[in-house]
Image 1 (tube, rainbow, N blue to C red):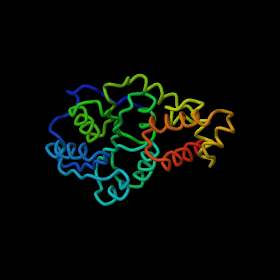
Image 2: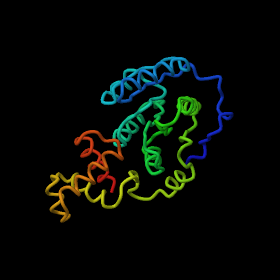
Image 3: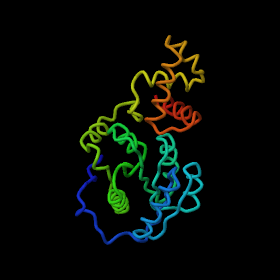
Length: 224
């Protein structure tokens, strides 16, 4: 599935897709403005959007490529929405998570590239140019082999691989509408233990609000 991914700069033409429209949807204004300044030198048009307004921004701007810093659940929604567009925008997922599991989940949910915040500007430009040329891109800081194995296994119920079995158990109970105390009582554990699992999941999945966490849980349980 990732056979098209290459980390070799010489395989990416540098003549470059200056006609492409890029939408940047990241949380931090400073980062967004830095992206805008850098990308305008390489692409025709760059537009900034608040991550919470991405569906509307995509419909209004109609980008060729969208750089997204969003929870995996929102990536899934945006990718599904883009399937109705012809041609759909290519989605570049920006994350600080270096795990192969999260990268595989992002690709499985519709991303065309997975770029780490820890990487340099050159890597983001390479990812955009690779995607613009109908390729795919994985950060060089993540094992391509590990991601390929996770994708090729196609295990059931593994679209959010970053979670442990215990975390999935906690997530399912929250998705059923239980409170933290009720989850603790059901599992016969301390409330603090439930909180530890919940906020650990939120950090790993880049979920910033309780509403995002519950929505993710409902979507995850619906795939089982």
